[in-house]
Length: 96
Image 1 (cartoon, helix red, strand yellow):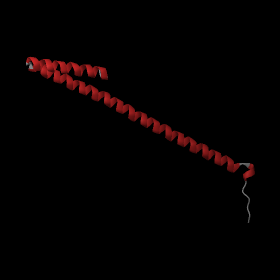
Image 2 (cartoon, rainbow, N blue to C red):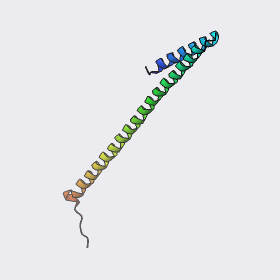
Image 3 (cartoon, rainbow, N blue to C red):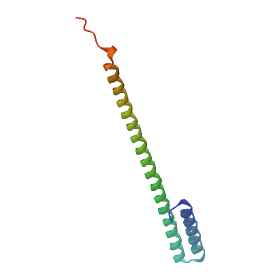
Image 4 (cartoon, rainbow, N blue to C red):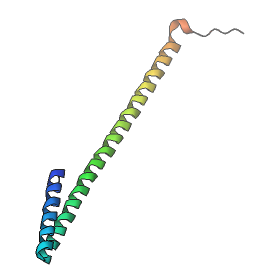
């Protein structure tokens, strides 16, 4: 029970219970209402943490993909340079 809709429902429930407690002078309901509001805040914090963790994981994955692409490009470039240098028509002539 840690999604935004559940958290909002818990917050509204807490506000209603707290307000009812204030109207009737029932301190117990006031406290229970405030506690539900705190619980809703905690649920929102958990949801925000999950979203933040997902964002960080995605950023790390993207960085890893970029590094892998760069390495693959470097290997391909090096292989192409080596192949060109060893081609039969590319022998360096000694001009001494």
